[in-house]
Length: 244
Image (cartoon, rainbow, N blue to C red; front, side):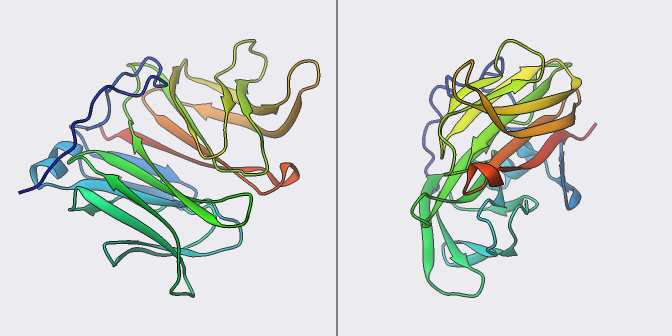
């Protein structure tokens, strides 16, 4: 018999979203730099006792493998690569990250997975050069007519980061710390420049600026900040939308 952990209250950081979108009734189309992939609906996966997991490599210059219960779930995932979703049958899962050319386990994380829900597993590098692995739940359904943004801070070279749309006074997210997920925020669709800022006015620096970012309605955008030094900061960007 499978045992599930109660989902409890949704994260307080989820703005305008609540718990909506954690499990979809439709298939989901995910767009990455590698192209588009389609994964089954959350309802379909739940009926078969499965959750859906993908892997993001945020470790520069290193190809990684991700195993679950000694099964090679993702193999030879390069830096900035985002895999398609795959099914996981266990509810209590121990994720292990290894170098693609080695047997040693570099990082582990044990998480409880809920049937029909989607998760992103991110391998990231810490200040001391060792690796960490973080698991976040994906909620891909924004409020009707809105675009959804999420930021995951995987750059050990940065202190607290503020995220803002260029030209707007209010921040999208503030004080995003290394290893943390800023949560989701639903915004008005637009083509905009997204800035990642350090410091307090008037001494603000912008180590990363994403120009002409097209935020479309009914899509959920994830940005993973990576880079060991402020001069090397990049973003891994991908998005999800339910298939009409």
